[in-house]
Length: 315
Length: 134
Image (cartoon, rainbow over all chains, first blue to last red; front, side, top):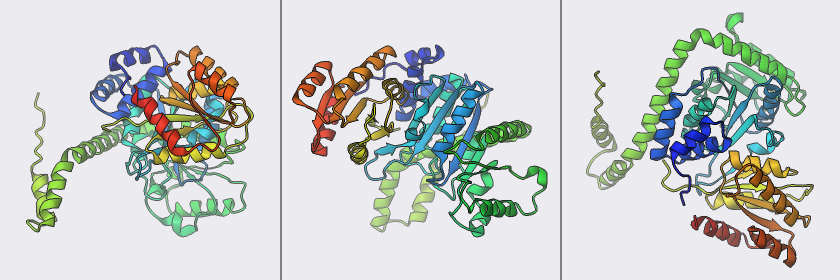
């Protein structure tokens, strides 16, 4: 049932700015195989430097989709084209997924300056599906001014997204926990900008106080901005867009470091992904051996890991 | 690197129909059948549905409506798909249907056409068959 055709045609379509071309290219990358390699090879060399990638993360129900809907509207108002990558969880049992982020963003369905695509996580931890990371290249090659990545609302330990985007925003809502939650490490540390959504609720002020307190003795100039929003009404969205622009500019100073980190994250993630597929057969073999008592899990896994030998390319 | 391609469905509601139960039920049914289903929400325009179907690169658009307007909606969505050169995306429908509606929809190339109370297995089966022909 593969009628997707030749990736080269799809690339031609993308070059002409055809949205269907981009949509098909995304599917090919998501499904993997030789087409994926060709498309990523093309996209990697096309990367438009002006694209700003904004990550939006936070717990489920925090209002990420609604906030993105309003962010898109604000960026459109400012004359920018916007691509959205919305990741929702896939079912671990059936592999299927109900992708519902679009429901909140349906105002933009008829706007051809906006491209929204929903992704099932397809059993990847860390909030961003393997495909979504690769697809970022396609979005950049297509030349959007702004790309917004919404990641699954896992909550506490969802730090991977920050390596793949330019600016990470963490969306918090009042009523989810006290100061202890604020003090926890993890996702809180990766946020460049904090958003307190549903800030018309009475506990919002307390949350803001706690958040500001949690910055402790950080010097004022490096404290992340805290923006209060009411996404459903659009309150605070323009301020957020301004804060994102400021932050993106500030990030330029560390762009070298950030680029290294991103390459590192990308290579690690894709190596682990490929290894996982490649080694599955051996892991099943080992499982059987350990089950029969022929070896220990530690011994067998070390033996397998020792087989990997990488030689640096010499040119 | 998924060996088999997942079936992607856009579940869409157009017009002024408020009745969402059928759509919400099917979202779970399709998910449990291992498909990726994207919901547009209610009150969508035909053009919006066509655009969403293209950007999501779905195989099938599933139209749900319980106001007795499926023929009109299907016609509009088909026209909107044609306008953006995406006629190859298949359309199935379900909801409140008369026998005349079903005949008209079938003639348009809209398949399935499940009335209220249809077993969900039959709906999943129909989509799988539709995709197997690809």
